[in-house]
Image 1: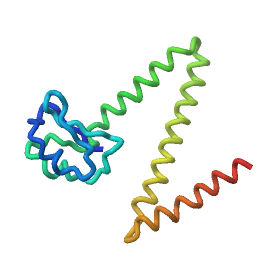
Image 2: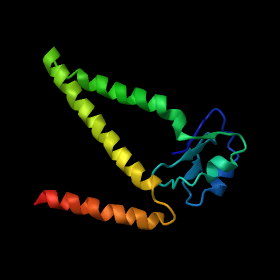
Image 3: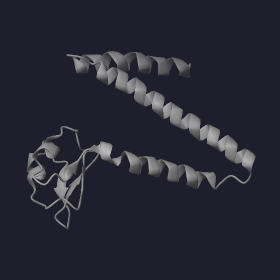
Image 4: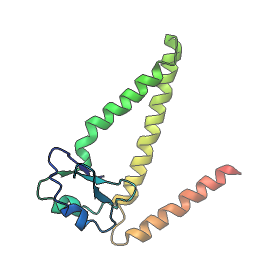
Length: 137
């Protein structure tokens, strides 16, 4: 997800004008803001920004890891003894392993989509939903 470095944005509006889905606006300080829910990740804003203010999401990895760790640290405070904390840490590790599995399986389909990405995605979705439905019975 692209994001805007507020220190670099000069409020020129080029990215606003270029966005094909109107996912970017200028805030009250004339700084570009990207609506993550509306953004289609086309990269046009990044390509046209004359001030290099629209940044790649990979730059935020350290901040996102820190946020995850802060979340875990906050939850850890709910457990009184070492045994409870150890059990919690095992559960949180399972949670993140599950998240990794979701990402890896998603990437596998996305990276292998080839010349017919819509077809590849549709072909992958059907069996996954069918497998989920079969566990409900």
